[in-house]
Length: 217
Image 1 (cartoon, one colour):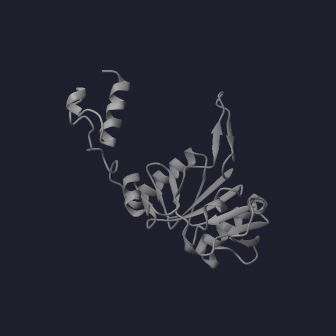
Image 2: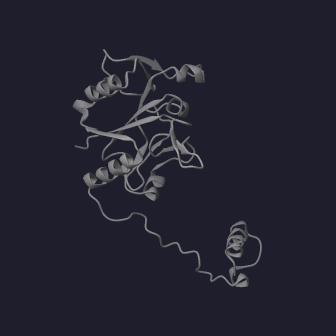
Image 3: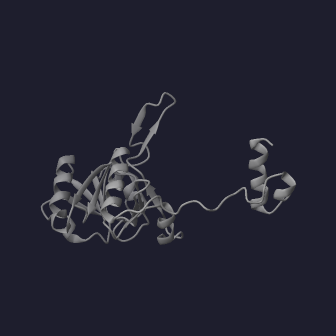
């Protein structure tokens, strides 16, 4: 039996049509469901280290601080980027951003893509982060704002509360996420490669992604 026959057989079974597995010669237990929900047992600190390692591999910049140091760290990152304006979701804690920092731009429904593109940076929270894949997930909550404010500005700083918002695996993440919300899964800055594998960043999202692990020292 060819690979094509196996694939078509799976599709027929999934949609409830076509011959049964025994008719195709594929054993009934061919599709196993005993995969691991998580790969290994980790402490919260080890999970944070794994998340940081994967994010760095994807060329995201990773920082660690506690609640007391967050505002100063955000001020340094925005200054280093040369940001004069920063997009602010409606539920972002006010104390995260220093009063003397860049001009705050609220997330307005009437903002055009050009308006958002003129904004230098955006600071958000997240729904959760996944250690094994180095992924940050946004769901449009009050600390994150609408999806478009994290896709158009060139610089995104995302704050992850550790360990509250950190899970080890995708199955664990899916158990905590609401599938009816607008989920955005981010693994590093936006990038693509042409046929010669020349990498270009910032094509369909921020060119620079910085992730702050809040509470992970």
